Image (cartoon, rainbow, N blue to C red; front, side, top):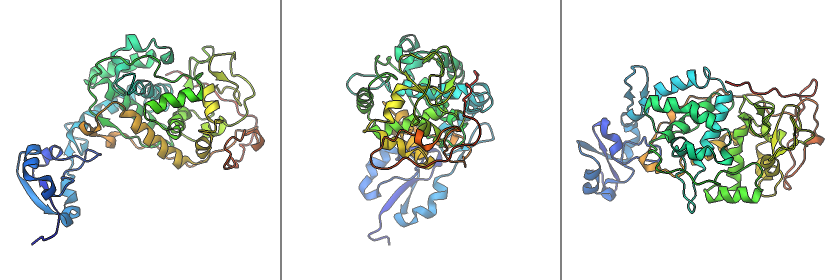
Length: 401
């Protein structure tokens, strides 16, 4: 009857659909292999229960039934996997009590920083569990690393939520980072996978790049963790919603660009501007002159925007919001899974709220002209931008939570 047609086996019991053969998203409910190739014995080992045989051509028609959603215990939400239901009360709690009612503010900036500092503690040769929450579990060790200066504040802010909701530290750090970013207009909706086990050991020291490191050293360290130079630049889109507390301790909350509550491309524009002064005392390790009053610039950002290995990737984001969003989302997913077995995790990205869209494009800050751009990419000119009207731009500090 179905001669020369591939067959697929699917479970009739939707409660066990994730025991069959998950795809990369964790949401597939049919096997991804033809029945003949999979073999009855293999299938039986994966799934115990009634099944039906579906010809390959009928899969699309059956898709609605195969992706039946689970009603969560709260009676409000549904999910494609019951394991994701536990995240909704955590979402509500941290939006209200960690992120000040859903703001893109100081705690979002610090939570996003924490996702990187925890996950990048991973090396195939030097050890480290990656995105495993070791920076919380072994905070007495990792928070004293020089590169983690000041990160103990957000570790201790997050710890009560981890304990209250009985979630692994690794899962919570990445979940809080993704939720926090969703509060910033213009951000992409980040992916989130749940299922990180508790960290077994602290990360070794010297795995987190420092602002004063050479570009060669930064690219080597990030390459050791699996990131290309272009992905390093993409991850730095996080600085579009960031502020520094400890580069110059005399001016905590100093933003990296003029729009620290908006996930936009201004960071990539403003780092390319010629630096003229320091926002505070100056002479701090890892700091170089910035172009705007009240704005801080770290040495590594300055050099990455001008180094021949990364300057064209940097410039490509200067007035391309969609490209920046896409590259950041992909790089953050990769970061969030460092050291983890994705095949054993569940995709709960649907729990992450959708950020507000952003319509305005990039611009030059008021008081600046195109001649203030320090062209670095040799293969294409920097985008021509219009300057905002009015007096020279001055950037206010990010207020504490």
